[in-house]
Image 1: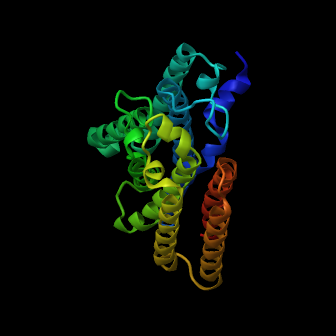
Image 2 (image 1 turned 90 degrees about the vertical axis):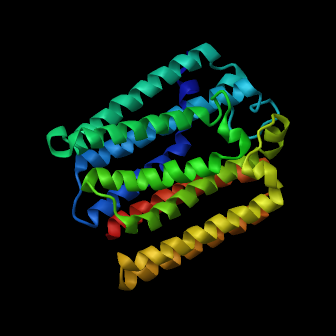
Length: 300
């Protein structure tokens, strides 16, 4: 079977978003001068592996439910198109889950040596990892997919925002920092924007398949207003957090860049009407989020 079909199913263009939360958490730890290079790399690798697993599960689940019909816009889906059989995708999901487990175990071994941290910390993070895998699978492939009843946005906020950012920071520092909830929430809202763009693009095909995402329930005009609310709230959260870590010229530069990026994105969103126009905004915003985190790293 052609490797390119599996690469398409893995959807590499979604990886910047998965990496952003983990790298932001490592950045927050670095601001406290408590970073570990191995933990940083393994956090990023585990986040990427979980994203790939979620993408494969989404490809499989949406094909099974009929959401990925020939009328759907956006990148071709491999199971629905027949490029990858359902049986092969199930096997791929098993291998992908195993890679998540191996990377997650290596991450815990690097971050939480048992003699120092005890089994309680290991048990908590093993449960968190299991919950992440279950959430990724059950979004569209579970018996009662929660993505079909409009709970995807909440799950993305929790797992891509709060858990990814605060969890990564904890694995460096060994403690939870309440102040980190602000940037973690901002990241979660940015990730919700990516999901909302995807769901706005697929409103028509989702409704035909009985997939009632937030965007499908709101329809396009109100989904755009919801998107604007997400972007505005995220920008306010970033503005509340930035002065605690940056001062002078770097602070003003970040505030200006934040306003420019948010307003530019919302301008093009307002103009976008067709699924193809909405689809173009997905990789652009995903890349912008990763660039933001990279800039924070460079200026820390």
